[in-house]
Length: 50
Image 1: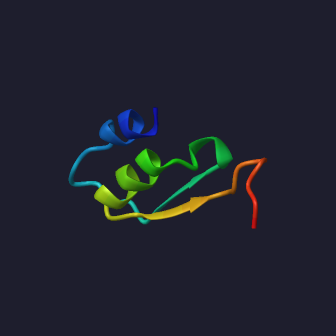
Image 2 (image 1 turned 30 degrees about the vertical axis):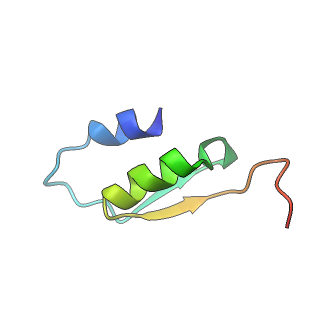
């Protein structure tokens, strides 16, 4: 879902960072954010282990 949301932002619009909850803490989300040149600020999932 996140990659599709990021695709709605015009390509000439600069994105400094993307802040989400743990729902989006997936490899696909991190890759989509990195492709935009933005910093990923994502909470760990509820079941995350240190």
